[in-house]
Length: 437
Image (cartoon, rainbow, N blue to C red):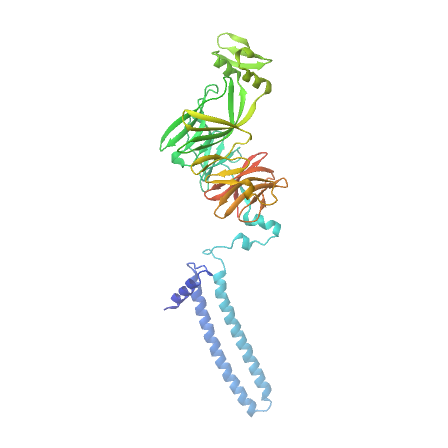
């Protein structure tokens, strides 16, 4: 077996301690050859010094005063031997250092091993959270987790996150999308949105893509004539058994839509003091009494102003829909658990495949559990304490801070390609955070 084979066998046997990289065998071979030459020099030097010492001893017997000479010779021999031994030790240590020193072929130490910082700063250096740019830098962006990744909305455009970039989702131009479901993959894309440009006659529909074909199912309008909905946020989940849409909407009176529902062709209208001042295409300026045209519930909206509500719309049949009002004014998160669409509530958090009871996973001392998510490395939790938002995962807990010093008020945990991320709510809007360490 050659020297190279022996080195490789040794490195292979100790593979748990040494990273075997392409250039390391040559380095060890050179070091070993140098070490062999040093050892030979050492042995030759010791033999020479032994001869000198023998001659010096003989002189000590023959010549007077030679005892000092023998001491001197012995001291020189000892110093030379020590120097040679040290050289051999240094050369041997160089071999191990060459194995431990990172090169372009080795993997550097982790941040936890290499960074030396105070305890109060280590948590941020080990696994800090960094802000991820949205699809359009500087634009207002809304985020939602969907199908093991995340989608982003900028104005009327929707994007999906790939491993390192954003990609625009191809959606029919005829749909003004309010929610996207990627739970079955992009080949089976599902979207919810408005169909039609006229705000008085447009319909809310759920469109499903199978391959290259789209099929739409209309969601019936449950508002009285004259009332219109403006949806601020929504979540959509579609399974083989049901379609579920969770949304937050603002309901208000539109005088033009009210007149249109009565068959009156007006181009503009406004309501003031119980009267509708309208401009018709043929008759010009006309005044109508609100009480004569509108239902009582519509008149109540005029007096009390717009109403914001959260509602859950569910259907197991295209022709049968059930609408359930919700108490919270945030969009209710949805998750598919055992094939059924489940909603999040004050008692449970919901993700796909997971329904966790808040009281059973909340960390000690936390005031409120915002969200929880089970991952292969443990349970990731987002909660409030002392008026701040904190995260706790497989490492120690951390306060969620932004580089811009914006105050985080709420958040949502989720997965982007199996990595935990946070959609943080601030007073200036949403921010997407990913682990930076």
